Length: 278
Image: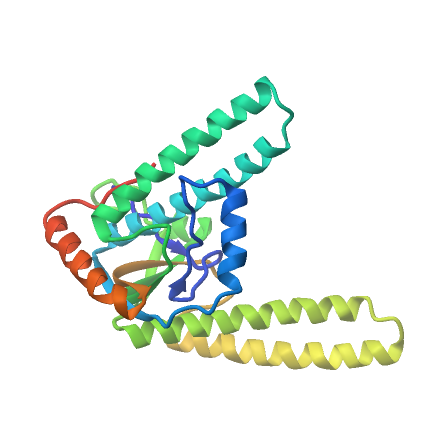
């Protein structure tokens, strides 16, 4: 099964991800009204309850891929629903409705597969905590060409491991470091735009000072990340997760049921391969 690592250049490095609910049996107007009503009502107290531990690179890559597929399916359903509502009555609208119905049916089937395999459902909100991972730098074409040929005749590797993050704290610290670097880089880009469009010498001098300061901070933080993790914003990296744990936000009334359900999923999943959604 092909490994699908996280690309640090594009991934959201926070350990928490929230999945908006979708009901295949409801129309979207009803959902919108329900969301508005829910937002106006006090939410019950919830806590995080563990539902699954995902072991191994292959299983974690498959889980990441599957969640991305479900989220893409949800976005496609939203798009099809909007197009269907906007289309005039007739063949075109009927065709769009048929596509929407098929998309809803597929999402429901894939969602059930994920629920059975690891207790995950796109109808709920989750937190995924990375416990163990490896960080790889993506080699340039010149670096790949300079590698000695493999003795077994296989193609040269396109990545090289630069560090291993062996526990939750190490992963969270690394992700916070990368997030801060990305935020500073974005701030530097914004200040550079202000500098380039400054209306007069006074505004330009102020923008230059702000830009020089953020660039100094960015370069220092980037150098520190390079020393600690061999990570630099000037390179592209991938994160390969070895072990992660999935938690669900549950009310006290739900917690016991969630734990029992998680145990059942874990018992039924022993020895079975991770599901793969295409």
